[in-house]
Length: 452
Image 1 (cartoon, rainbow, N blue to C red):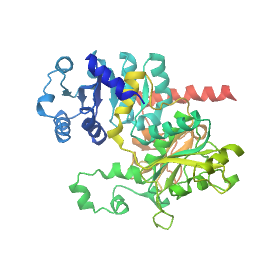
Image 2: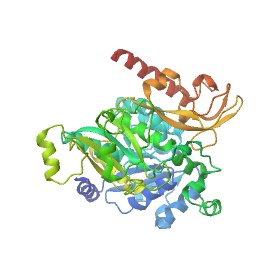
Image 3: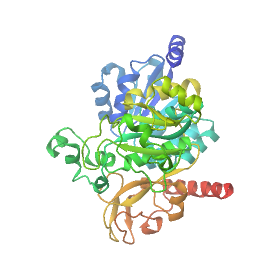
Image 4: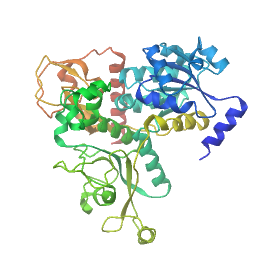
């Protein structure tokens, strides 16, 4: 890799990549701790709903107060300091910003931010994988048409998985499966913010004292976040979800090649070329040996006697046939690694993963029997979880995307475990995020019909 050398050259020329960050939460704060250590990058602005909170985040990760006193983005660009403010769209429009990072996690806001970047010619790094799962394929198409780069965020697992898939394919291997690890049991799909902490082994009192958001943490536990992230991977790589969605088979790193191969060859996959998430616990709750809870993986095939021999000669762990093997990365560093995306976009005009097609969708699915008149509370809440589905199946059932399943009222009852449909809820057809998502459904449904 040459990114650091290229950044040093930019620093020497006095022409750093000028960055604007939207959202100074946990992910954003982790990136803030690193950008000040990286040559050739200048954090011109931070836009947050609460500028005082954002300044507190900057100081907490080591920024001196003197660096945060810029009165405007122009002042920050001139003096090499940072302007902290609450006007996101002014920052996107500013001539002093080259790359925008959306670290909000808010789907509707993410759509608006990308479209503004298209209007003003700003590259965008989408930490906001929730927006990507809702409408990423059309957002990325709009970005390409506008001549800007739309990129998944390195450090988040989807971009790391995309990198591994690209490595395997570039080396001439067929990718059989790709995904990540998590802690999963089937009963977690019914978990709510009121029941989440015992599953993590944390007392509610300790969680409250630590400022931990139960709905956010629950979105990781109930399977929603895994579905969102695997939809992003499917849409960026062309790997397809299984018809039944994610199975979450228990699997350790030594068994990746054995488990993550097609069922026709003795594994757990529906087909070659699949996204799948593996569990760090057995179905009876016992820990999986050498689990991959924090990591990512790819399995790939040899498919020739010569390559299978090479697998043996170089000590790769394979399945019993010797044809399937795996590579994995045991950890991901979240916002601490985000600078890789910023550098790739700012120096090479290359994304670290981006949607190319619409293969996977995340559909709101009832956690319990829901009654007409109830209001859905979205990701990680009390009413629905996100289930990964092939996009064609989501279109066929008229599934309500998880990213729009917040604050809408049910007009009819939905049984536990069943998808919520557009026709089940009262929604505002003129809301910008709804209109954009419906446009994506029309655009890509036509493409699927043409492909047939």
